[in-house]
Amino acid sequence: MTRAARDRWAARSFDQAVRDVRNPNGPRTDSAGARAFLSGSPMLSYWCEIAVFDLNCVIDCAQTLMVTATRAGAVAPAPLKSTKTHKAQKCAV
Image (cartoon, helix red, strand yellow):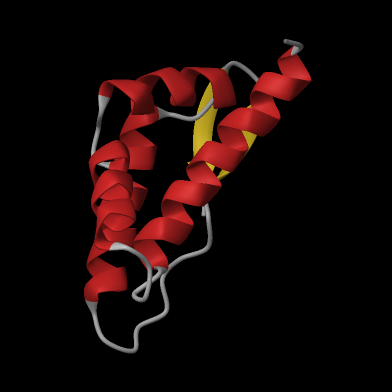
């Protein structure tokens, strides 16, 4: 698998988890699994490394997302996007 393919796969994994958390009409198991993933599961660390995300930033953003997503009528933040900086890693919302 090429680096570009792994990057796209990682981005889709994060995007799907964010969509599962944000979807109030989706299956509860999808939402629960997404919340577990975004809360610091071992797989989160793996995908953060692949996507060049800062793990702590992702967890902080995900916690904000999960609190916001549980409020009725609230709009959750946009999905996380990988941004590469010179000798630094960060995430953006």
